[in-house]
Image (cartoon, rainbow, N blue to C red; front, top):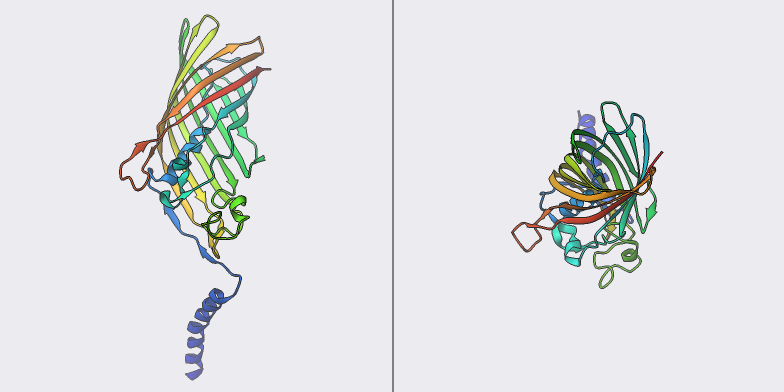
Length: 304
């Protein structure tokens, strides 16, 4: 009986001792691994919506019926607006300014294939090349079809989606971590560059159209987009390893409009403006405001 009681006490005491030793061991960081579902208007969620909207796959042209199994290559370049200090104040619900102005534009190659039933398959990819401390790997696909054509007017529909990630030192930059913890250069106590990961996934549906005026094809689109995003923090600050996971999901809408021109039988160029209203509530304000994404998108298309 005593032996059994002794074993029971050992089973209770041993885990407690192990937990105390884990906390007391030098060099072992305390880990924060909370999971938080963000309100759609939180500053952190706004930043996720902003960069996900930058990568939304628009048609960059009017819907058209392509020859079956025809093949086109597109080289797309889209601007990324530079954000003010207030816009970059997103960390900890608007308390911390983040280094978000890393790149002035996003470049991605695209392939468009003519399919049966007047469909066009659009495939785009931002390859995982590290630039200025961030590495994006974004795969997008779209399917478009004209459903009405009368003279210079054409109307169509488009569905599209994306999966992918952006990795980098987003919460603790290499510059911050190069300074000793404390003000003025490292007030958040970064001990090493963070290895954060932002997942940017979406699915969308767009009503598209075009109108030919002489040699210029004007085009437009109106879209609804469902976004599903995650931000996995991986930062060591003041002896604490922050592995918090921030989740944000919801709907946005967007419009785009522009024009395209044929340079020859094989080459054409297109340009458009993109607009998407993005809601945000920035403390100490208690009201929601619209801080939209407006950017310029261009593409050189080569028919093979």
